[in-house]
Amino acid sequence: MQHDDRTTENPRDKIPRGIFAAALTPQKDDLTIDHDALLGHCQWLLANGCDGVCLFGTTGEAASFTVDERKTALESIVNGGFPPDRLLVGTGCCAIPDTVALTKRAVGWGAGGVLVIPPYFYKDVSDNAIVEAHRKVIDGTGTSGVNFYLYHYPYMSGVSLSPTVIKTLADEYPGVVVGIKDSSGDSANMKTICESFPHLEFFPGTETLLLDSLRLGGAGCISATINVTASLAAEIVARREDGDARDLQNRLTAIRTTFDRYPLIEALKHMMAVHTGREAWRNARPPISRLTRAEGERLESDLASLGFALG
Image (cartoon, rainbow, N blue to C red):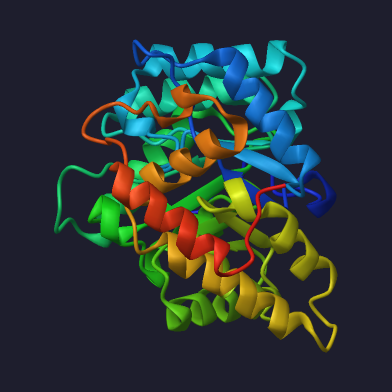
């Protein structure tokens, strides 16, 4: 069915594109969100190669924070002077009313877009059920000027977004469903989405696919390790047609692959602690923990062998 009363045009210059860090969420020793540190980190990311920041995705430990905590953190970031149009906000929750409430708040604060993972507790649900869950969110939010990004991460959510789901939602909500983040890591799936839905902004969830996705018409990258690799990723975007772009991509892939040998959030927080000298960067809510001392030393050694230095 076509929703004729909806916004059907959304100029691409108003749609977030480029390199986005799936931002880590710094926490105080009592494991509450450190708003000042979060604002500082987001500003640092913009200054070091990011086109924008994705708040409260998987890497941001979104599922470990309450709706109110996430609302308050968003307001703190915007009130602190961070440009809201450079934010993608992860708003997906298991309960649709929570997703609607977070999405409304993000839109109200002028966020450039929202990244919505489907309800992720119940598994083996039908395509129709997944579509209906998204309809409830989009219709419940209202669509004027909203940029919705679908979030495909079956490894974590246990829920896949099939081409049928993507097509149905894109057709029903033109100019509203504007893109997709694909964290499957599946290059064949990436190719299928890019070729089947060229009107949608495609973001791989890993830098290992950055150059290939760009050459397929992709919009950039939204990734955990962009927290520490943004400058190199941005260079690949700028030089994607150059002869040495593949060499740059190979270096970026080696860095990402190194991080992937460790628990990812813990490894990234460890490196931010090393970079900033702030021990609190290692704080995370259970079940996320910390790297052991031996793991941290091995990670630092592995990255040093690649010539990696955090700017």
